[in-house]
Amino acid sequence: MNAPFTPHDTYLRTYTEPEVTALLRDLHERGKPFGIQWGSAHVNGVTIDGRLLIAFGDTSLATLLNLLHLLRERGDRPWEE
Image (cartoon, rainbow, N blue to C red; front, side, top):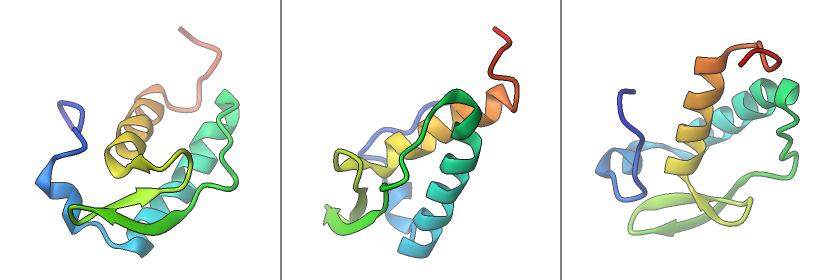
């Protein structure tokens, strides 16, 4: 991913609920060293214009993907700047 996703990217419509659930599991694991913990986050079944929303403040899939991208770039080294 070279640029951040926006909530209106049509590509986001291709994600299924199981795929988003797997991304949330990845977020939980990668976020632990950074203190990012959304244990109650889940796909809430609501869509806006064909895009799934995730239940942590009813955020968009774009937010989840952008956060995961940042965590993946950082790797497992939360103490390094």
